[in-house]
Image (cartoon, rainbow, N blue to C red; front, top):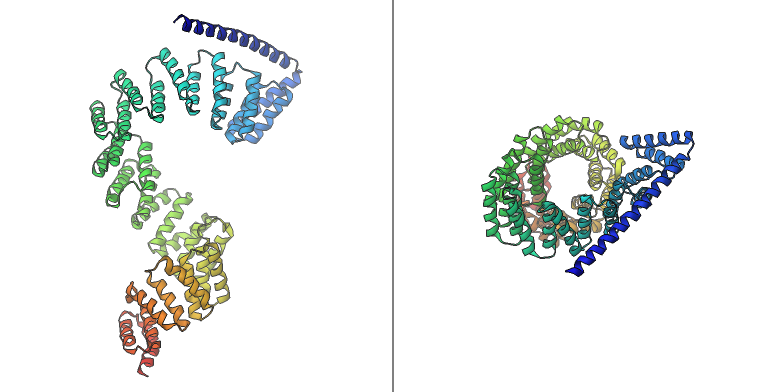
Length: 582
């Protein structure tokens, strides 16, 4: 015992000596600093103060370039300006230029070691660099200079823990507890360390100590319940949640927490009960609710059978917070994700007309109209939106699609070409735009341009099966480059082997290559996979049967084609009937 006391006594003597030495050094530095400043001429002092004030002003205004200029000017006039170095370090730290932030921060500490904020900022920079060792040194040096600054000891402990120096961190927390008593700022980091090191009994003890000392603080029960859940102790977790609700029955965060517990244990019905209670709870903040709802949508947390419950949660938010656009935006995202474009359209329409300058809402709204095949609505607002947001590839693309589908090819070409001038390298629409241009020029019988744009579409995205199918089919109709057409078409049926349109294209290419037996196999697959209701596919099937001299089957198919044909299509069957009658 005497030995330990002697060691501590000697340690205290060393610290006292260091403090005296540092005090003397600081006094010398301050006096040197003042004498250096006093050596400046009056005009230099005036220019220094002016530059410093301007630098700080422009920093506050966010004009960092001018701020840097004036603060650097301060240093040129007076090299001992710790304030200028500190402010420059702060600017470079904010801008992410961490090497310069460290350089200027070190200089500020070197000039004036009595300013604790210089230590805090420089240590924070090292923490962001994950250089925890340097941060620890700075905090420890500062703690010697400012022994009564309790926050420094918290920072030392946190940095030690980040550096995986758990034992040293725990020692610091022990010292803090001796000074401050039971405190969650100490107990919770210790609990986190114990959980990280797998010492679950000690972690459990830390939370229990908080509960014993602060039995009416409901948060600690929630933490304990979450710990039990992580450890798979579900019965103990539920008991703890019940204790929590006895203390604070309307605790919204607890309602969210117990909902997560039920989700973890696979009890979705109970989870939604608590989620709806939490979302209706006026005591729980909007941000907490919206964060949880956002995670549901993004992470596919729930099964499809519970889509209606997720929808109800979104409706609760929009009803409780009608002025919060984010609630409506997230609910519309949910509708888009689940294919409910009608509901999404109504929400997005409201959001857009309340926020006409919001490009995202405009893009989503016009996209929903396309999905709903409301092409007149697209054109109605699209032309206006193209002028309002001329750099939006999405708006130009969707409006172009609507014009093309409604027969306005020239307007569609103009919009597609404008979209391509914006940024073809990064746009997700590039391949599709080229593909539509290929379709348009094919319909205009400008096959040179059609081929050019289809090839550009494939170069932009070789997996675009719509482009591959359409181009292959057009080549087959023209009887050109059939081998290439076959290769492209084969890629589509390999990816979607039950797609009757793709199977029909492949069969028709084989027909054009006079490979009728192979064509029969694929046209039959197309017919069986939904093509029995397609006039074009039935007609192709009949044509192949005629080439194979299977006239009875061909006649049956032609009669079926008559049943599904539009009036204007019937005449197309006449040559086939004549061929059979021969």
